[in-house]
Image (tube, rainbow, N blue to C red; front, side):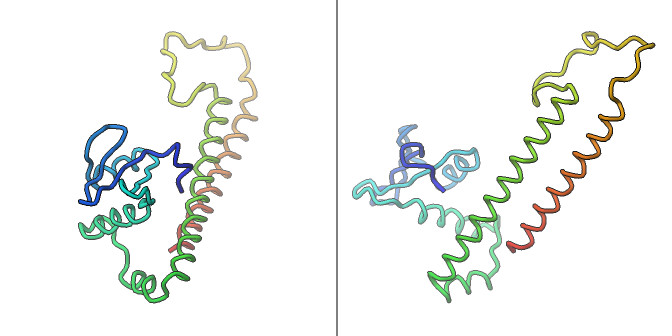
Length: 178
């Protein structure tokens, strides 16, 4: 899922299997590459001599190392099927995983958008911003009626329903992908 080679963080792999981070000008381990990816960096691994793209091989190696250390347990039956049916099964798995991940990312973005919209309407301003100090808040005069309190309650209830629906869709996609 690399966006493009120009935007990727390039790691060169030498014939001695050492991995060289071209931006940091230092050798890195598979664990460090895994950390980079978890931090959101797009990684591209290329053979230092031929320029061949080794990204998939390296990422698979990271997954296998995680499996070896029991950090990620891929069921043996799944791995048997993957080997048994070869490219056809692998293509299916790749398409399914891509679709599932795109759905998860899309749902996350939609939930973030709804939350930002809701928080803006609630007067919270930018999510993550420092809330105003209590002494800086202005309370409406006691005699003023609550502005649109019922409308806000309805809107919050509606947002809760939409969030619940999105969570259910996300959970359904998770179970379908297993």
